[in-house]
Structures are given as C-alpha cells and as structure tokens.
Length: 471
Ligand code: MN
Ligand code: MN
Image 1 (cartoon, protein in one colour):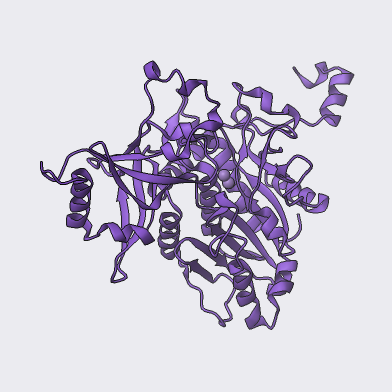
Image 2 (cartoon, rainbow, N blue to C red; image 1 turned 90 degrees about the horizontal axis):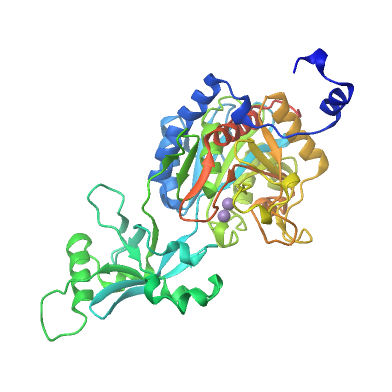
C-alpha cells in the first residue's frame, strides 16, 4: 500500500505499535548470500568441534593464524595486541586490547562450548549375552528416548599410565565404525509405551560396541575381551585406563542444510556452539577496538557452570585481575566497569508445539538475534535480570547497526525454564544480558537454527566489540 493510501489509523499504528522484524522477508538477495556464506564455515566448525576440548583446539589454532599469542601475566599490552589463555584444555578466553584505558572496563561475550551428550561411566565396559556394551551417564538436560537408535560417535580423552593423553575421535571419518543405543521394537513395547516419557530409564542408555568373541572358547567375557584386545592393539590401553577417562558418545550426524530453500542448519550442539562461533569470529574480526574486547568460551554450562572450567569458577575473574594489574588496577574495578553479552540460545517458537509459548514474548526463527532480559523459571528465580538502562543500551547499539533483533523469554511463565552463564557474570558485578540465536528442538541430538539468525548474531557481537562509546 502506498504511503498516501494509508489510513490515519494505520499511520498511527505504524508509529505507536511495536512489531518484530522477520529477516527472511526483509533480507536482500545480497544479504542472504552473505549469511549463507558465513554459515558454510560455521558448519565446518560444528563438525570439527563436537566437544569442549575440540572447540578450544579449533579456536586457539584459528586465533593463532590471526595473530593471537599466549597471554603473559604481568605484561603491559598495547592497543591492538591479541592474546588468549586456555583453562585445562576445556575453556578459553581470547582478548583484543583496546585504545581506552583498562580502567574503563572490558566488553565481553561469554558462550559455552559443552553440549548435552552421553558420557561414558568410569567403568563402562561390560558384556551381556555375548554383546559388548558401554554404560553411560547422560550429561546435561536430555530427553533420554531421543538418544536411542541414532548413530553415535565416541569423542574425548584417555590418559595412559605414563601420562600420555590420547585424543579419541571415532565415528567422524568416512569408514569409521559407529555406535548405538538400542530401543524396543513396537511389537513388544506394549508395556514400555504405557510409561510416561520421564520414566525412561537412564540405565538403559547402554551403547552397543561389539558382538564378536576373541575366539570360541569356554572362557567368559570373550566379546568384551575382543573389544579390549582391539583397543589395546590400536591405542595401547587397558580396561583400567577408562577409570580416569573423559569419553562421551555424541551424535555422529554432520551439520546439514535443512529445507528445500536451505534456510536452516540442522546439527548436534548448536546450543551453544552457535553463540561460541559467532562471538569468537566477531572477535577475530575486531582489530583495534575502543574497549578491550574479550571472548569467553566456557565449559560445564549444561550442568550448571560448575567446577574449575565452568563460569562459577574464578578463572574469568582471575584473568581480568591479571589484565588489570600491570596498569595498577584491581580486577574488581575493571569488572565493575565492564559490560557483557551472555551469548546463549533461546527456544524458538515451534508451530507444532505452540502451547508452551506465549507469542508476544517468544523467539522466532528468522527474527534475528534474540535478547533475553532474564532467563530462569517461574517467579524469575535463578537468573540475572539485566537493568533497563543496559537493555536499552544494547537495543540502541543493535538499532544503530541495522541488526535484526527481538526480545523473548523462554516459554510461558511456569511452563518450565532454563538458565545461562549470565547470572554468574552478574555475580562479578558486571552489566550483562542474554543475547543469542533462536533454536528449534533445543537439546535434541539434532537441533535447528536459521542462517539469517546466525549471521545477525555475528553482526551483533561485531557491533558490541566495535562500539566506541555508549550507544
Ligand atoms: Mn546454552
Ligand atoms: Mn543448553
């Protein structure tokens, strides 16, 4: 409708009403091409870095090619200098020094690089009725039934008696064997299917790993023996080496375009590698920021950010203190002046399950980067709640940079809920808000995101790092 034909009411509505933008409707062909191209590299990252250690290895290697060097405590860095530090191989912090004094704080993003999966138990290997299996203990919030009858790959590390660290990755290369959790055929599942989904027994998430005996003999456990013999021949490990190992079964799927229009990406672990990748590449594209720019890739978010590599650990506060000290500053003063985007995903509105969403406050695919002022659950428990001032500042920044964004919370009030690292960053007295990508089928072995949203989120992080003053 042409402008002059609009009614007075329509004009007033245009002025006064707020409506989310749908990037798929407003993107030009050139923008779509840019977003699609950006996502090709993201898909490679998804396939290469299915676990936190692999994500750290990828990020450090990539950062080194862009001039990042290992951070040295006590050194005064110059604007434009690029550093990184790694925490136990499972978390990492990358920083580009800015032109403003450190006393004015840093601009920080914090994403997590762990995803839900099936961890092997410490004594995983057993044989039952001539079949060898691994016992697992699921990691993070999963719907257990989704992890049966899908191809699985084995990732992680084994540390041998002499201390040698063995990086395991089986099921990713062409010709590799895969693994699988079985499920009951429907013909015999009459009783099983009467049970509620929550009754699915975690102790039934056993992974089949072999069925041929070492040789036909009267001895017991010959299939198990054969598996250990194969592993010993290939890696020099024995059953006792599993006791200290960190091994997990992750979906063996590769990232793939979804839809006839290829508008989406299906993959394991978009949560939260989509925000890890977009924030990390945004930092790589930041050369001489005003504020020192920091990208945090953390472990253990899926189990509550616990332990030395999760964001409840002091490693981030220690790093900021180390940044501050050469300038005669206290870490806490730098933190207090800092701002952070907690980079994590939100649940996208699913037309098949509209009943759990409240549409005015839901996130939608193709509606760009999603802001969440708070997360948590009913009654706003267990969450950071970004201040109105900081929320408005981030919105101004996104608008000034023509970034497509929307605001959402996670589902209906009292429907459930979830958390992010934001509250742990808030605990450090940093202004923080959740910013990320809407995801369909979150925490399933195969999650979906829209390419437009991935690209808008990357642009949002670039704008945040490059901002030279309060927007
Ligand atoms: Mn997450
Ligand atoms: Mn999650």
